[in-house]
Image (cartoon, rainbow, N blue to C red; front, top):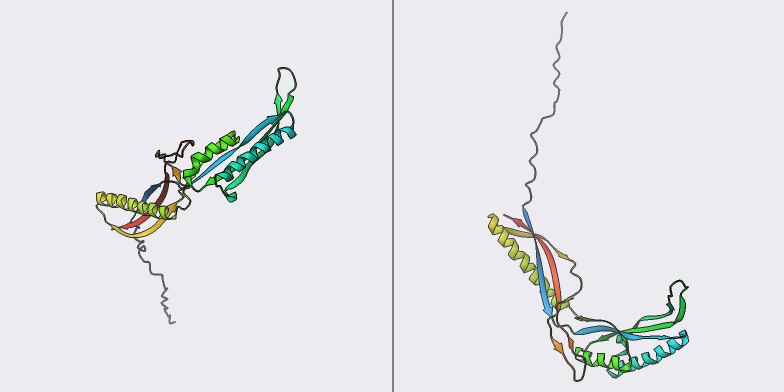
Length: 228
């Protein structure tokens, strides 16, 4: 009997060595701050009248009469209608609390306030004086601002980038590496301009003295560089 021998060759997969991993990205991230200061050119103030009387009708009538004088004073100062806006109006009962007794109604209080924007800061002192003279007995804040911060913000951003670059170069030099291409630039929310109170007095003849100060426009960036 003859035997035949068959040789079967199995195809085994070729085992390769581990794949080479991508080289680890070498980067440095640095933040920068930029600030520009400028004198504000706009101011917003809140002014109004609060009156108490025995009845709501009497309080409303007295408050309205004095508020009309306040509005007339603003017009006389050259404030445009578009820059005057009612910001608060309320009618509220007033009570007296006696020990051991229920609260007793004593009258009513009416409050009427307007928000006023001035585009000419030289008129601020005179306007404040005119408001008080006309009968305003409520002043709830004076806020200075810069109407258009576009150019100032551009300068602040340039300073922020320059600040981040100086920091990154300092760290790179200390670490014995060099900066490569920029990978990303991001800006943080810096909010609205903030006051820095550099006391610059704006005085009008026979008017309330005021200090305008400065506003600070800031920018914050974060930059990622490759390092070599």
